[in-house]
Amino acid sequence: MRQKTSVFRITVLLAAAVMCGFGSGIAEAADKTVRLAYVEWSETIASTNMVQAVLQEKMGYTCEIIPMSADRMWYAVADGEVDAMVAAWLPSTHGHYYEAVKDRVVNLGPNLKGTRIGLVVPNITVGRQTAASAQRNKPYITVDAIPGLKDHIRKFNGKIIGIDPEAGIMKRTREAIQAYGLNRFRLVEGSEVSMTAELSNAIRKQRWIVVTGWVPHWMFARWNLKFLEDPKGIYGGEERIDTIVRKGLKEDMPEVYAMLDNFSWDAEDLGQLMIWIQEDKGMFPYDKCLRFMRYHEDKIESWVP
Image 1 (cartoon, rainbow, N blue to C red):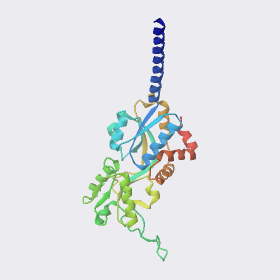
Image 2 (cartoon, rainbow, N blue to C red):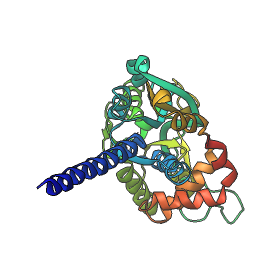
Image 3 (cartoon, one colour):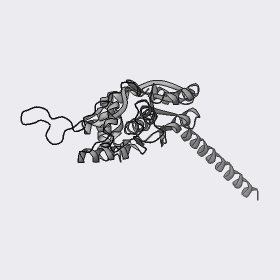
């Protein structure tokens, strides 16, 4: 009987030891999980997957990326539901979101400079770019500035093709409609995918179209496009994309905080990655980030603390 009791005690102790070790392993794994919020825009998909790849491939963390709307993204960081985002368009586009939560987040500064938003039209000709006289043919859309849109409302079918309704560029476009007297135009809500599909179809058929656009974006590499002049400055000037993290991240995950603080690149690098992602219609962004890492080892190493 004593032998059976001893065996039972040993078994219980071994089980407890195993469970303690297993539990600490779970806790350690949980501690090394980073959560990033993003909006499904081309440049944000590229940059967020890039950060995910560096954290996982170079630093040994598990990184979960979570798509959400622009407003939800800001509040998720502020509320500590996620650790960070690399998609803050400042000072203008997302300025109203930042003002609402700036006391509850930490801004690590720009990861990309030289961005811009506005209304965009195709800048291409019908047929040949030049006439027989070698003179350059004019683009089939002749509008150069936002006020000129109302003179061609029928050609534009009374529509401005937009993206998701909570995006900062949509807020600015609603303001532009009021400021420039474009009340007969309808701002069409949708997504980046639906907007670029409409743009592609219009260019193929040489139809007039105006869309909400921004740089960096792969569509500027694919088609010749132009921003309409904005004399009232509704869309602001040159902007930047900042990295925003939750409060307490520096203390909880100092290496992750340092990597996000180091993360910075230029429009040429991001543009290259976006084009690679677009080659497969956006289906394998993580794989394209691994490709980018192989070609840009020095840059990647400069981000890793």
